[in-house]
Length: 300
Image (cartoon, rainbow, N blue to C red; front, side):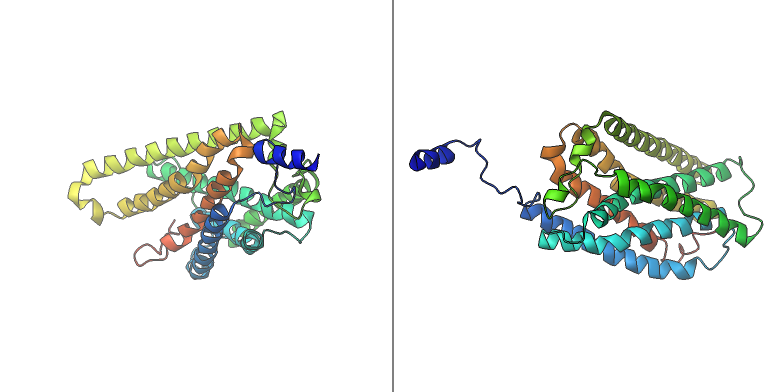
């Protein structure tokens, strides 16, 4: 009887041979994730250090306030990155379910906060270019900081209780010393629909803003020709183009892939983790604006 069972296990591929506690990521995926997140951490820390000195200028500027909030979003995300590197290296999570939820949710919060701030910065600059908006500053520095603080307080008050109480409520992390396995939540029709709507919205807005940016640059090049590079407004639009390119290379691919992932979460989960890690490369935006001639990004 024992021999028959053994033979059946060998010849029948449908019989599971792995432990229920086996890692959900294979070694190539783990190495890829460790490399990406390590690079994100190094670039992010360097960028934050350099950007702090650049934001000592006009703190009342709407663009500067947007950059300040972008730095806060990157900072909060970077705090959780070492925990991800630790987990992918050891394949074991011993920090509790609550911490797992926070670390897992923070990368998603970072994606949506970064996209929102990018969209706001680009919209403000587009309106300024087309002379549709003249007001670009708060009257007092305290008002500017207060507005930012209010946004983050509301985010913490609303999001973190929601994350701790609802995020991953149907996951199987409790049974295993593993983390970041919340795919079962997507089977909920409401969660599935919300994810689809958000992904389509982000892709659509990114494409629209890319189109607007292309139209503006084309108009400036046609108007000024080779003299475009001597125009201050031209370099402002180049800075905008950098935002657009970061959106197209870091955020849009993840959401395009997510449209497919939502329909096959189990099979595509490892690849989804890689695409999600790539969104962390948005931290590169801080390094982009620290070079000579571009470091005055927080202009008006």
